[in-house]
Image (cartoon, rainbow, N blue to C red):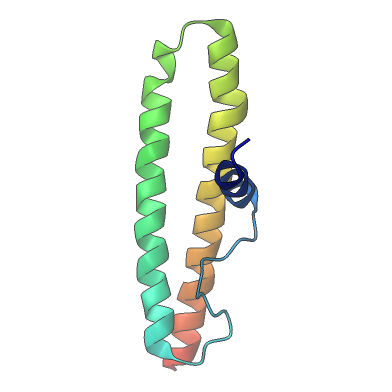
Amino acid sequence: MNPEVADAAEAAADPDRVLPQENLATAKPAEARRWVRIYAELLSFKQRVLQAAHAKLPEVTEEAARREAVDTDLVLLEAQHSRLRRRLEFWKRRSDKLSQ
């Protein structure tokens, strides 16, 4: 397997992954607000991808293909969506705390 593909697959499945330069301990309100915007944008994108995947699922008629889509692709997309939602919630809390 291509090392870049392997790294991307591992990163995609990591539920605790943070983005490059994401400083969880920042004391800067503006930086926290920036991460709220970043994660809101990523979460919105992932929601659209998930909606499209679910909408197209009825077109997958072969059982083996459907099983792969449901058991692998959708599971990974849902996990990524959950991670992004958790990161967004973290940054919203952090932003609120720093803004007080």
